[in-house]
Image (cartoon, rainbow, N blue to C red; front, side, top):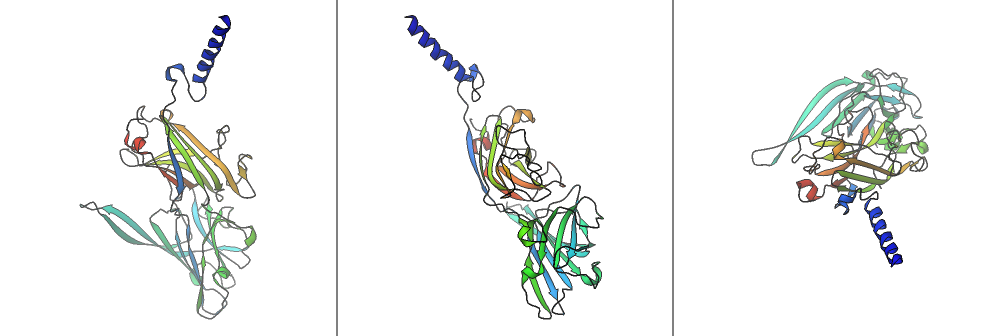
Amino acid sequence: MNRRLLVLSSIAAAGILAACDEKTSDLSDTVRPNAYGFQMVSQATNLPRGSARFRLPSGTVPESIVVSIRGLDSLGTGFWTAWIGDSLGTSFVRATGTLTVLRQDTTLNALGQVDTTQTTIPVGAVSALSNGGPNQAWTWVFERANSGVTAADSMQTFLITMEDVANATTPGSRRVIWARRIEGGTGTTAGSTKTAGLKFGNYNSTVLNEYLYSASPARGRGYFQRQVVSVNDSTLARPPLGYYYAVWLVGPFYTTSDTLFAGDLRSPWPRRNLSLFDADSIITDPEVVLDVPRQITAGALRISGDTIGLPAQFPYQGYAFVRLTIEPKAGFRGRMGVNRILQAPVPFLILTGGIQ
């Protein structure tokens, strides 16, 4: 009899301990609440992209560069700055070009249809600026005669850097967009043009050492569970210098704000205290941040709505998407930028505030 009571007591104690583990926090809630999962997939990324057209009127020496570019975000504490350099890509001159911005805006008309309006904005001669946006396309024209490039200067390489000040005299370390004339072709016919695609990443004068950023093969998944939302990502390329990964909840159905900044991507459990904010330049966590290949093998973010002022009931109602972006560190922190990497729809019951 005593032996039987001892066995039953042991079983009861085990049940109590199981009810109090990390998945079930207290005896009053012994059944774990439902979790609603999602899988994040690659989106139309809107990464910086475009082309540089080098014109060679004499057949050998470029006299102008016409740059077409999209995907640059607005900067709050920095400046997109243009430079023109030689064929070796080691000597650069700050360049002034005539900038024209094509802005495309969309609105809903009385019938609920989307109307598109395009506005051409002549910005004029600039060498550095802070403005950008998801709906902007730039055409930046650099002529040797008025760009600040002398007759002795080469026009073989085009470079855009992210600088802290508007009057930088030499390119800083954040050399994130570039094009080489030779990559547009090797012909030297007088009057010809050579068009090279813009690259996005970390510039290096040696082609083999340059780093090209790619949104592939990033993937992710996560779940909502009452107040908690958890995101886990893997096989992410390390951001270019001056960028970081951020997680967002995107509305706007019933919310007063169309986005919620969830935070910077962090290391996965059990090292969630380690932020990946500086993974562009340093090994923030040797377990997941690699130099070769230049990769973040795993990242995560876990937030609880009750710690950031969300309602106690249905805290994520109205948010339609979970999104991972890369953001410029010189941008407006807490305001979602233009460069999307991964996205997932919020589960329907979370979106609508249904029974959970």
